[in-house]
Length: 252
Image (cartoon, rainbow, N blue to C red; front, top):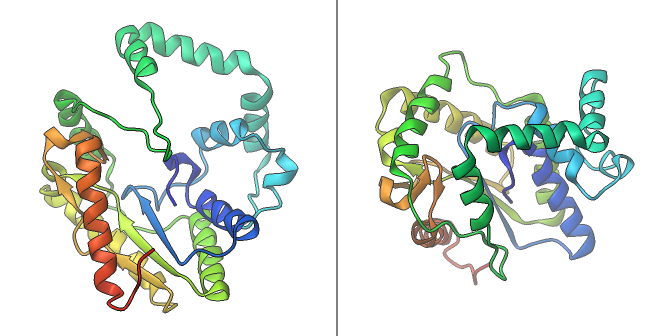
C-alpha cells in the first residue's frame, strides 16, 4: 500500500478496508512510505487529492479512520472540488514558471498493464538540489507520528488481527548521498524507533527498516524515487527481506 504522500496513512487504511470488502483479506500487506510522511498532517495537497477522488464526500467519510475536517479544511476541499478555475490557475502558473519541464513531464506519463509508472532517466542536478531541500526540512524537535496517521495505523492493526494477515512497514528507497548525512541518519532512527514501538503492540506487524535500501544517483529520479532499473533491484531486495521473516512461507 503506497499512494501520494499527501494522502498520508489514512488512504492506506481505506484501500485495505475496501480490498477486504470487495476481494477478501490479503495474505500479506507491504506499506512503503518516504521517511518524512509519518509526521505529516492534513494539508492543502491532501485536500486537493481528496477532491479529485471519484467518490462523494459522504462515501469517504464512512471509511475508517473517519476524516474529521475543520471548517477551514472543508472550505478548502470545496474550493478544490468545485472551483476548478482556482486549480487551473495554479497549473498554468506552474507551466509559465517552468514551461520546458512541465511540458516534458506531461508527455512522459505512461502506465504499464500492471499499474506501474516507469521513469527512465535520472536527473542528477535535481537530486543534488533535493538533498539540500530534505536536509533543510528535517527538524531537531522530538519525532512524533501525527494523530491522523496514528489513528490510521490502529485501523490497519485491527484489520490485520481480525483477518490474520501480516503487515510489513518498509522504508522507501533512498539516495545514498542523503543517507550518509549524520542529520538525516538521526532523523531516520527516530522514525524507525516510533514505528517499532507501534509494531510491538501486535505480532502481525513488522518493521523492516534496519537500514534503508540505498542507491547511487544514476538509479534515482530524486532522493526517494527510483527510475525503472533501480525499482527492479529494490523490489527484489524487499522480497528477500520479507522471505527471511517467513522461512516456511509459500509466497505472496
